[in-house]
Image (cartoon, rainbow, N blue to C red):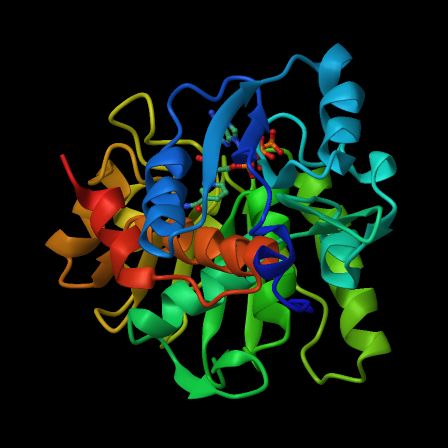
Amino acid sequence: MDAEAPVIKQLQNRHSRFRLGLIGDPVAHSLSPRMQQAALDALGIDAVYELWQTPADELAACVARLLDPLYLGANVTIPHKQAVLPLLDIVDPLAARIGAVNTIVPRDGYLHGYNTDAPGLLHALQELGVGKPSESTTISLTGYTAIILGAGGAARAAAFALASTGVERLIIVNRHLERAQHLAAEVGDFLTAQRQELSVPQVFSLSDPEFLIPHPLSLIINATPVGMHEDLSPLPGEVLARFGNETFVFDMIYNPAETKLLCQARTLGMRASNGLPMLLHQGALAFTLWTGQPAPLEVMRTALTAE
Ligand code: NAP
């Protein structure tokens, strides 16, 4: 991602308050306004971060409005992360590969699209002490087996992010096997183009995880919503129990803070985290893209965790 020169300086003399927002449907539950407003205020940027509830038939108009100089940018969430791509002028290569944009930046009269979920996940894992720090890819996961539960937008971001970290093995487990197979093939093509040694990811059905062979040094990432609305886990406890206690479990869900999967992992003595660090880091990366300023990470973290 290329964070261009700060736009803030050239905008400082204007009298109107600048605007940023979250485009999605629904958006009311989002923690992004809290986190982003705290960051804007901490840096003295006269802007307001709003919730823009946007049905599909209003998406194009909502995105086009971002070219007005009053707008610094936007986040995009469910269900528009894919649909927004053709509405943008320039899509960052990583976002194009993932097929999802969660950050829009108006720059020089053009709308640029980025995906900060992918690097946000790697920054979160780095902070959680998973793998080894790496200058080029944030973290190196050499020797790890990464198991992604899900094959939707967030899983795609995780798969392409992890594919560049040197993981030894990538496994995709999804409810609809065909979707996992498509993602595995795309990641395989990407790896071949990059001349990387990792072979095409393996795929399994979430309804039959019995075949999931435990590998030492595993990283299990839940990128499904299972556990968000009900006390359910995407993996049966007995399957998880086959993995060693050096396994790290990352659940992208952050509400509730402690899902059944996380409880299972902690009971087995595994390290585990909910999705809050990923939310924080994807937001921090978006903030820098909009403002050209380093994000005040601790201010944003405090805002996220405040009751
Ligand atoms: P998505 O594109 O709709 O994908 C959902 C995935 O979950 C699909 O693979 C789907 O499987 C699977 N799934 C849905 N319901 C299921 C069920 N009842 N049983 C088994 N599998 C099920 O959604 P997404 O954008 O990827 O988001 C996935 C999760 O990640 C959400 O909980 C979201 O809140 C979270 N997330 C967190 C962050 C963060 O910053 N922490 C960022 C992005 C997303 P099929 O393909 O078989 O339908």
